[in-house]
Image 1 (cartoon, one colour):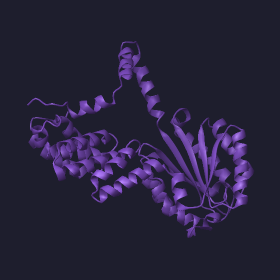
Image 2: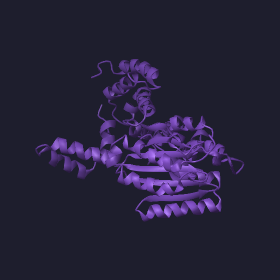
Image 3: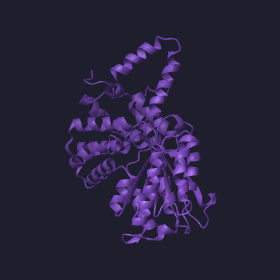
Image 4: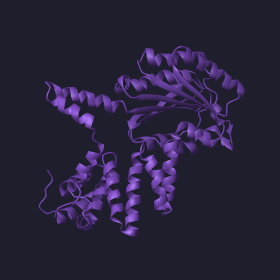
Length: 378
């Protein structure tokens, strides 16, 4: 049967490809050593979009002081999930704490090293910690943070590096060393890092002292920002990525309430920076199709799952499952050309992984072979 539309793979590729990049590739492949050069360019471009963010959290006695109706620490624990909602799986997160009876290096510890898609690990680690009391050696924590970043040498050359310090009073041990440690990140480790100090309900005196230190950092060419917060919303918005996070939260809430049409706009907005929003858009359009049987909604579901499949096992499984279960309608309506080989390979990849969809994928492969019996995994 002649299909009105191209295969899913070709269709998605055409939406992403660039004429300029295509022309560049053509020129490069005709040049000696072009492939090696192109690999280097590709690596640099991909690295430029990496984000490395280390949370450095104060666990000294100052975090036991009140913030709104709880302690600073308990408020932070209750807000951290929402604050990190907008961090996508490609971002590398790390978590270090500082605070203890002494002002030495033992009073700071890396709890979660940098890793992709480890947001839940960071959140779980924070939830298990209680303030240790004592003083807050922030300068020592920053000194150690340089090594945390430097362990992944890719940070040295490319990518966006940032430190978010959440504290009650700042450094209560050696505050005069604070500007020097920020300076070392650039000089000793050759790492460009943006440092953001978030002060939870600081006293006027503490805020002035921190701002004075920040001024000294800026005078040396350092990149630092100081933000006092006095409400939970301010805390969440300051730590997180509020625009994408709020859009995703709003869209998800509408989708969960079966308000699918209303959910599309905020989820589409969030999808620009949160891959999971693409998966939820696929779910939303598929739910709409189940309600009104409009083929265009099925097509949209396929496109959004397809756009997210390289970053999400859930999207990979949902796409394969949809194409199997709706294959007759898709072909009858000429919605898209189904590549049965691709469907089987997606399921096989999941079946051989440690994904939570491993078992489901194994079962679906059998169904796929009944539809496309002549295909074999390459």
